[in-house]
Image (cartoon, rainbow, N blue to C red):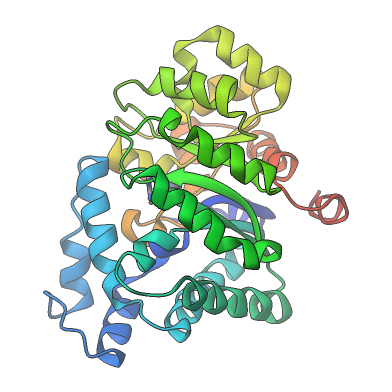
Amino acid sequence: MEISPFVLGLPKVELHVHIEGTLEPELKFELAQRNGIKLPFDTPEQVRASYKFDDLTSFLDAYYDGMSVLQTAEDFYALAMAYFRKVAPQNLRYAEIFFDPQAHTSRGVPFNTVITGLRRAQIEAEQQLGITSALIMCFLRDFQPEYAMATLLESLPYRRWILGVGLDSDENGNPPSKFASVFARAKAEGYLLTMHCDVDIPGSIEHIATVIKEIGVARIDHGTNIVEDPELVRLIAERGIGLTSCPISNTWVSDGSKVALIKQLAGEGVKVTVNSDDPAYFGGYIAENYQRVADEGDVSNEFLTQLARNAVDISWAPAVLKAQLR
Ligand code: ADE
Ligand code: ZN
């Protein structure tokens, strides 16, 4: 995809990227070799060719399989540094980055290993690349809420390194209400709240209503199905609850890019934003996602600037940093 000079130069904020979803096949091979792991493929090209997702479940299978190569703090550092180096030339200024601790602790990798590796990369990226970042810890909704609660408690010694909590993984049969008490406790501990409401999932609109009215999230990840209920659209526009939409991801795991809905929701006063989700799997980082909106939506540069501004507005950056990002 060709990125226009305008899109490339636009100062950007990323609010929806899973760090494990930035693991490119080349790094996967490097880490596998370092850790003595045999991959079921011979080349990075073969790995890439195997990425043929037609729904969330088929993507998640590849996503979790890929993580086996992440073993040491050095691996998590390498993962995050590769991401920062990739997006620095795209003029990414600030990122709030999801990580999935349970995807690692469930296979014996300690929480401390994950977070210390990521943290070291964040510090280095800020010093060397000028990208400021923060971490959002996601709970896996296909595990039990007791495991999420244990993870929340395990995170507390690292509280100052984690800005908020989210909920991801397979939404089918795992509604937000399952995690209401975990999120209530996270809020009491001072974490900010967001949750995935994936696109075109059965029950999506009920899930969206729950996260707004019962869980009390500050943002919704994806969530563009909200257009099905104009009353909810009015409510989030009024409250400034933003959506983190991911156009290229949506083409793989849902029914299309949702660029038309991004335009519609922005027109209705919703703080909708453009993000990359799992760029190594879906083939597009932040700039490619803006370009997708530009190409498919036939929108003005002012509109793209407004989307970038929305991301600053709904970010959880401190006020001083927000002022710089604007
Ligand atoms: N984990 C990583 N990417 C995800 C997505 N798009 N939806 C749900 N869980 C995820
Ligand atoms: Zn996501």
